[in-house]
Length: 300
Image (cartoon, rainbow, N blue to C red; front, top):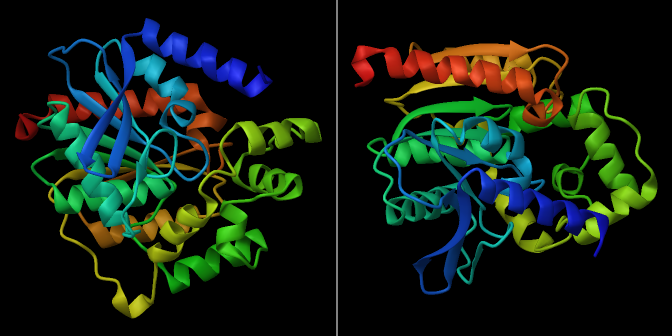
C-alpha cells in the first residue's frame, strides 16, 4: 500500500471514530454523490464543508471535521468527479454541482445548514445559497468568488505569473504540482519529488482531468455577464491574508457587492489554502462566527 493510501485509510478510520461514515447518494440514474455524514442522526446544527479542485471532501476538510463533529452534524460531500462522486450527464456548471449537493443533503434529511466553501467549493456554495435559500441559512466563503469574471481571472493570473488557469489549478506534472502548492500555501515546505508524484498518481489529482477542466472553464464569464445575486443569508468571508489567487482586495470588493449581509475577516500568514495552512486559527474563527450566528435571535 502506498504512503498516500495508508494515510487515507488512517484518516477514514479516524473519521469513523468521530461518528462519520461515507454514503453514496443517487441523485438520479447515472449521478451519484459521495458524502461523509453522521453515522447516527443527531439533533445538532448541520455544517456542510465543500472542497475545492485539489482533494476530495475528507482530505480537504479533515482538520475541520475533527474539530466540529462533536457539536455539529458535519457533512463532507465530494463534488462531481472528485472522490466517489460521478455523473454521466454532460452538464458542467457550478449550478449543477450545487443542485447535486443540495439534493444529496435533502436525501440525508438535512432541512437547514451552514455551508463552508473553499475556492471552487465556495463558488458552488454561493450557487447553493442563491438557488436554495430555504436550505442554506448562512455561509462561510473562503478564498473564492461569486463568479470568475474576466477581470478577476486576469488579475489572478497576473499576480501568480501564470498563463493557463486550468493547467495551473489541475497540474499533471511534478513541477506543476510543486508550483501550485508553493503559490497557494503560505511558505509551503519544499517536498521531495517522489511525494509530489505520489500525490498525483495515488492522490487522485490525475483522475477525471478532462471533466474537471470543463467545470473550471464553465465558471469563466465576461464582466458584462455578471450580476450580483440577492443573497438572503448572512455571508462571512474568511480569508487568508496572503492569498494570491483571490487577494484581499477581491474579498473587500465582494463584501461591498453583497452588502450589509456580508462580513469579512482575514487570517495572517495564510495563503489560498488557509484551512490547511492554519487549521487551528481557521477553526477558531469559524467557531466564533457560528456562535454569533446561532445566538442572533433573528436567525432562530
